[in-house]
Length: 157
Image (cartoon, rainbow, N blue to C red; front, side):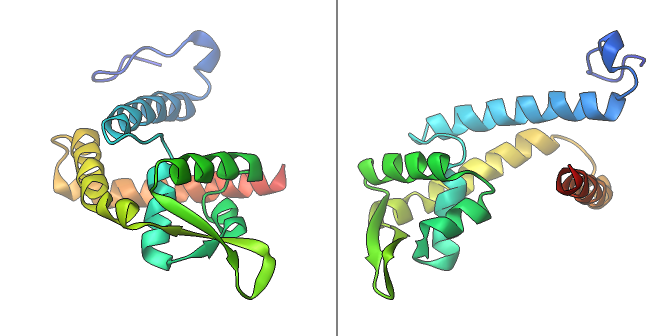
């Protein structure tokens, strides 16, 4: 693969997967920047997504968070425990099923919404940079197709 604008040359072992290698590099940098921005808010990556879901849906079972965030039970349990310790979420038994736990955002968690929205705006601005607006729709369409392709491949494996 030839060197692209601002991109590093792919290692020879990745030459048969230039798109995959480019995605790997972009995702790594995006996650790194998101982590830095979230750290300024006292959060770890993924915690903002959990809060966003709670803001949109209200109290939900912890099992729903596992599904929505496409994660495992142990990871979501640790995430909820950390957010609960920070006073951003609370857990309570589900009144309809005492075996289940409902997770909801607290007023402190709700108060972070504006800052998290600002953080996502800043992340988007850094990600998109000076790309022309006319390229964003085709870019989003291509990323949606890539997500569909990868989802199908994961399902088959």
